[in-house]
Image 1: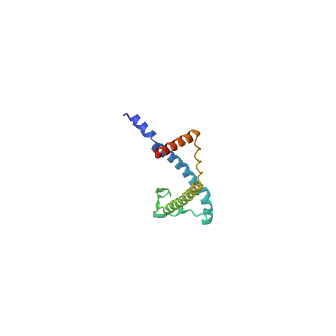
Image 2: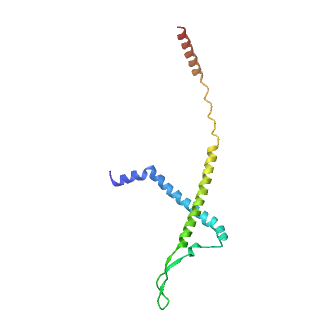
Image 3: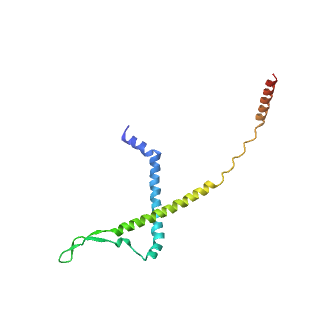
Length: 147
């Protein structure tokens, strides 16, 4: 089997298509979640915290080296704790936002599942032929019992 044929079989399998759809939907869902956190949740939190930006928190391990003209010849070595704290904070907010969204979706699914299913329609009435055949069958059974 040729390479092209093998690739075609691989690419057309349902699980590959499902994975591609999942990645695309996941990307779109990520944008929604990012917007929720940065545009809806962060502004009020920024007001509450007084606009604190954790990324400014750094510990200098080695200061920058400057020459006589004041030009930096070697950049400072810093431990960027604030960036890490901000990343953890952002992750926590994203996780909470995703949790709330999934919880809402599950509630909608449960509401749909709780709806009473429609009662199945009653079986159709037997036709005249079926009634007549049933009577013939019953008569034959009766005559066999009598012997």
